[in-house]
Image (cartoon, rainbow, N blue to C red):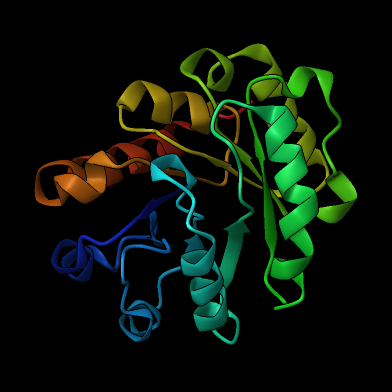
Length: 205
């Protein structure tokens, strides 16, 4: 399982040989894409919705990354905690991402229990929403369904060992957490060591 980190350039440079480390590009972070690619690490792109979706910034990011190799997924615009509005936005933005030959991630949110997942139109599933939804049984079943369909699976807001352990047990492909960008020197080395330990113990469903 990969830990995708936004920014934290100096720390990531120091730890870039670690097999569980990757990048998370976002519309507002002004990431140096050339530097990211030079590290050889896997990477994905967020949409910035958690702090307020900015359509022009998102489009600029898509244009900047569309010819870059190795993208794991691009998070389609979503509304935090609202599956109905997220599905509406997916219908509006999915093709914009796909037209740039980028893999599309659909975000599962609160209320997804009552809605279909557009499995045939996505390359990845991103588990988001409230803590109750994210850690609940439906999120777990969606993650397992995604893996059975050979979709990349990602869980957001994973800042603790407990959540890492849960995401690993569900066989998520990757996770991210803001604390690793805010406090990279203090948090990132220990988190990567913990992921190595999880792999060694084989805690998978």
